[in-house]
Length: 152
Image (tube, rainbow, N blue to C red; front, top):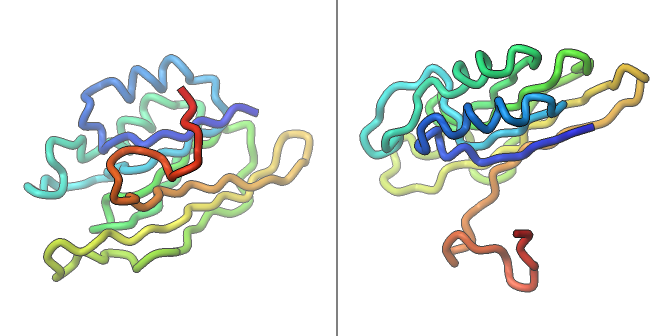
């Protein structure tokens, strides 16, 4: 089983994310964070993001089925793509920090955070779960937590 977890940064790196999926298209499961789905340009929110990144990923991964879990504005959140040979028994999400659309009506509020979870079954009838989560910034930049050795 091959699983890839990646923060897409909303596709702001251009076509790099699509090129990446083409290189690793044989992965069984992709779990992506910061994905736009049928989005609209929001000056301060999208910052040159690909507002239809979910749709682009779906076209780039024709052997996978995509699942979107909105976090903000119904068009920004988490996305999972599962190879068609794996049975998807259940897909859902649960908020573990704040709530859906936490930025609505609030200036500078922190986005909510949810866990997207998928109950899956292999062709050999083995059940397993895949969990997709975009963590909270620790206030220390793009570093890891103290005491954790980063993988290079």
